[in-house]
Image (tube, rainbow, N blue to C red):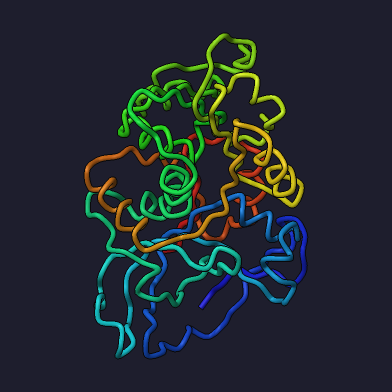
Length: 313
């Protein structure tokens, strides 16, 4: 089978197609024929060598975290799924290896794909949807009437965070570029700030929660629009943010929380319910498998609405 790997840290140019054996099914494994793989910032952060402490430096490495596909075979102890089931799921965040024609997954890493969404949409859900759920379940409790600011809301996490916050009764303000205005409007945003001609930090509004998805609104700036008792959420923390948040939280009523993605089966189950009930899942760019290098060149530099995915025929 074909699989995308890399043998050293670097840019998209280090990625290559290799031929490897189809993985052998073990007792508790499920063999999945992959149909689509989502593209996430974690992919290139790990590939660039920015997360060696978590990912390690052993090569070769695969790439890709969340996926959708069809069950091809199951181990004798894997009884929840059968050959032919359409599924989606999420592999180990720091090991990945989903970008291949076949992968092995465990039962707690997958869920049945809702029939009303495509394989592309299903692959786009797990990482960003789990991130949004983790924000609202472990980092901050959203109550009806809470004012939430989502900076960089037109991407993957923003797509789910905006809709889930609205379902929780929050009043949501989104900050996007001109191309994202219609999307966040469709997702239910109450207020929309176009950063091209308006600076949300210069407004009079104060927020209970500020979620920065663009890495362009640090806590030092965001705190000026935060209420006295409020929460700031950083979704791509590094060592600097971990240290800063520790000291800020010791002395400030404006709390600094970090999102460290920890996938869970219950998140997949909840996302299945959201998808089945019609939550918007926008996949604005689809790349065929052989254009994997182009995909990983364009997506980090582009401003796509929702998600981008790679498909495998």
